[in-house]
Length: 295
Image (cartoon, rainbow, N blue to C red; front, side, top):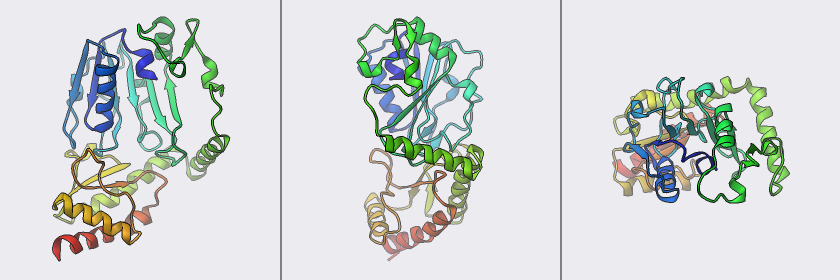
């Protein structure tokens, strides 16, 4: 919705380093067919050079690469005096990473990730600059009704006050309100960030002592603390056998890397995961590796 409603007025720079970021590249280049687009990409495990972004342009990026385990380490590279918009997919970062909100003009995330809510519900956060763009610029392509954010040249504020095109499940809404109340009960967003980083820390210690397992992320400052991606000194067939073993033992489910990513293990370390469960999983990882690769 954000890309189709906002892009086209300025050149666009897109930063992508894994599957979902590349999806946005495809949308902008092949679906919207914008001509003045710069795509800065990197292989799994790496970030592109963030300093290539020109903030006179609209800049599109994911904060956290869910399928690569590589995150943007901070917002220092984003120009406070930008004339373009920053459009950030923060699905697996909101509530787990410290986002510089004053540097982000459009942020999207979904309920099902860090707080473990129901799927299919997306959230959109707009800065005043993004609203100004919506009210002063009309894209040259047709917009489906569900993508329209303005009416008569003005923001449809009802979208942000509970008005809906089709009524969503109120059970899903109640579930998310419960999740937000839980956030308050454990100490707020800062505590959630601490919980997620604590989960990652346990894996960092585990990996540091074992030569057969490594982080897919090449720079330690860029290791995601939610979608933790690991590579193993093992063939893809051996990794699959490990994943099957862990599933059979009911230790971990769907723990293999994303289908487009290099073969490996992916562990969700968001704030809803208890540290004791991460600590209980890690010896089983070693057991599965020994069973498959050392026997």
